[in-house]
Amino acid sequence: MINFQNVSKKYNDQLVLEDFDISIEDGEFFVLVGPSGSGKTTTLKMINRLIEPTDGDIYFNDRRLIDYNLKELRLTTGYVLQQIALFPNLTVAENIELIPEMKHWNKTKRRERTEELLRKVSLPPEEYLHRKPAELSGGEQQRIGILRAIAAKPDIILMDEPFSALDPISKGQLQQLIKELHKELASTVVFVTHDMNEALFLGDRICVMKEGKIVQTDTPEQIRSNPANDFVAQFFQQDHSNLENYCAADLLALELVEDGQVNSETIVDLDTTLPKVIRLLIDGKTVVLADEKGPIGEITDRAILRFLETKIEKGDQ
Image 1 (spheres, one colour):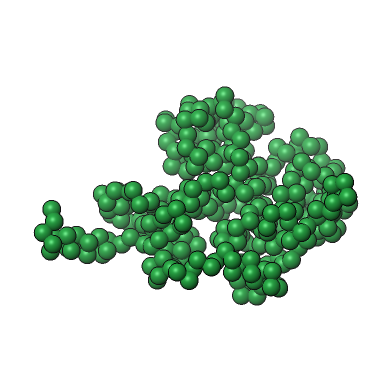
Image 2 (cartoon, one colour; image 1 turned 90 degrees about the horizontal axis):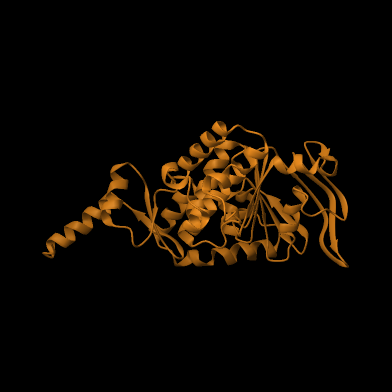
């Protein structure tokens, strides 16, 4: 679907991307990962021609990007930034409906699509349609940013470190959300991150970059088990160094999240009340507790019963 052929980019005399060759398949969740300055964002921005290559060609559906009408190309491309970049003077509905309106969807179709999407991300339309961005939390704003990018059902969704500025709980919820939406929409997603854990969780394939070059491109499983060199191995190890301090329950929580068994409604923080947790369990949810560092462990009905039993034995009311 998207093919980079011998693509390079120079700014003055500085080479930031060198002989970049990669193919991204239709419907794939493709992650560009690497340290700062590795060329990830430059690569991403070339796909919607915010940046033009110095050398080489980029193809979309066997046609050179340079041969597309720029407006046509960008209307088929969703874009989500770290900075969120909602229009502050527009309501939630107006932000989401921007691209559908530019594509001449009628008002009824636009509003139906907006309400459908808001429900998918647990933001009731009757409460959120007419709010302004300033009335939303950071996590809610980024949800709206994602909905705006996908509202018109684009062929490609570009995401440039969209969750890096969020707190860990919001970040985990939105990672799960975009994974679920990708399965449903079957759009091609190109995602930039410097976080190997995020790349491993989200990607169908991962392209590890360093200093403008490709170091390794493979599935998460292969990168885990067969890193191409010491750089990839160390980069992976650096992001996973905290795992040695996790107990079995922590690993279970992480595995539940990574395996897609935990949705955005069932990751709870330390301030969540016990009645809310019990209601989730009654509804058949798997509940994972997380703090600012990430998932801590699974909360089970048996654990709650043991806790209450201990309280009763101690005579606590």
